[in-house]
Length: 353
Image (cartoon, rainbow, N blue to C red):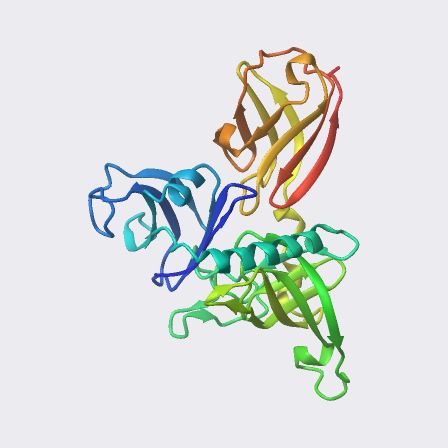
């Protein structure tokens, strides 16, 4: 396998990992944290000292719990294992701590990153867009051709022409700034996406966007990435990427992807005995920070903040945070904000009954 990105983000205290070139037939991945120098710090060594961070069907993962160990102290490595349909390891990738940049280069990058974040956080300039990356792992669709190793039906509504059930990995939210647009006369060639116009966008450098990815936006519709490029300072990439896209016509099967079903939703805040929890859908974090900020509520939760460091357990429908609270029945009035996958949710919950 080949590493695409290993990006530490000090503002969210997380590490974003993405990779490619995994074996054909891969059904998913397991991510382990391993102490450097341990027997498990080998692609085929002992795993007794490994801490399993999680498993994923995506070709990317965000570690929100071990930022200090893996990046700051530099005494741990990540091991990404590709799993086949039987759960056996078919390939592995070791991700070691990144080399430290020179002080001068890091100052330049930090200054550029600060300016970029000011732009992307301003809703008057930046808009939300979702990265849709076609699947290359998982359950093969009935239209999958073993001869061509792809779908033989580009209009399939099960795999959307990718050859794998579901069509796309979990959508990743990011921001974009629209630079310019070029429109081509559709009468030239109505069958080519370029006939619908090109857009040039600036997006953050991670999560990265590559040729063949799709970008989905309420304002721009569905775009296909035809190229992406980023500048560097002494081989260190700057914080933004320039992306060239073309608009896809409504007949493209990707338009039938149930995009809304993949977006997180927060349904309920629960106070337990020594815990607080969120219930909803699609709650597994894929990028950015996880945080609850209590704005109004009972005295036990006054001005409390819970982050990824407080997470006790996590599923797609429930995130449980460690807390010093006692269970309250009925559940009290509470006003709070949730930050998940670069999206902010403002919620107010009233007492039951």
